[in-house]
Image (cartoon, rainbow, N blue to C red; front, side):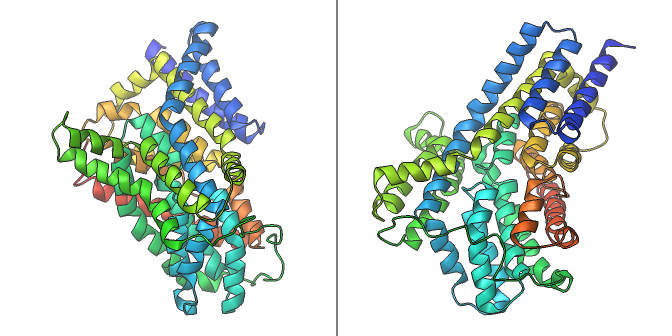
Length: 452
């Protein structure tokens, strides 16, 4: 057996071991990624100490690129939630509109609210509103809940600073502003189709209506503690739109100014995800926090609540970077790149496919993206005409595919909306699978005019 083939087989075996460690032994994804990466290095003949060093280097490099972005995005989400800004956006969008417009309204609100939030946090925050609107309009709970989940997941699946796309931006060396731009070009029509349109089409399959007086929503409060002044809808909306707006301005500005000039430096700063999010956090601190009468201690509490869920995600992202570094250290990424020149399958389609398979096996979109980018990143060097931003979107959209019983989001949706497993499959699972396929179609369509 040739050395190249042996290394490729070891790489494939490491992925299989990763899947088995998570699915069969129920090991935490961080530990599973670390063991798979170190096992690959040692099995390939790398000294244990050097294998650990390579893993640490990859861990640090990945978090250096994605950690601050995710941290600041989560911090921004915490302030928006705690101050009542997110609730204000949702309430204004829903208002007292006719029943037929409720799915479209809540999809739009969820898409906006979901931009700076982790999905689980946004979902739990909006569930009481879903129950309230369904009760007020005398509609099936899923008439409101399914489009809400669709809007949230478009942001979660495609747009930085969410973990999966942010990790892929770092892994592929993509431009964050352009990723957001193309993500919105694909995501807005996708939200319409999988939110209000899909809800109307499959409403006959919803099944028995849940009891609106029950459900795990009593312990969830959308009312911020100790709020002295209602949050401004305008300021809350500016807070949400400030980071993507600044990055898009920066992307357009840097493309139309001479490098080294003062305007170019300004636009380059706007295009930084860290600086854009930092500006939004400072703005939210004063516009939604201080203006509403919150003290420093209360704002710190909001930030802590926002940052609490992100610890495990940061570890998983870092370990995914360590796994990728091990593929480089063993030379497997170069082998993949060399062989990829002769592959008939386009890199964008392959990135989606690898991420989709890992998502189906592992359940977690974040872990699937972390492992998929490690495998697929070498394809970019073999396909210089491929847009790294579209590779981000292809991989991230693959990691949305076919959510089922091994995905925590599946059970979150099922339990909060009092559904059976069958109901969850024909609503939640169907919706995310369609999102994934539509996103892939959008990426392939854009690839005819957008190149690397």
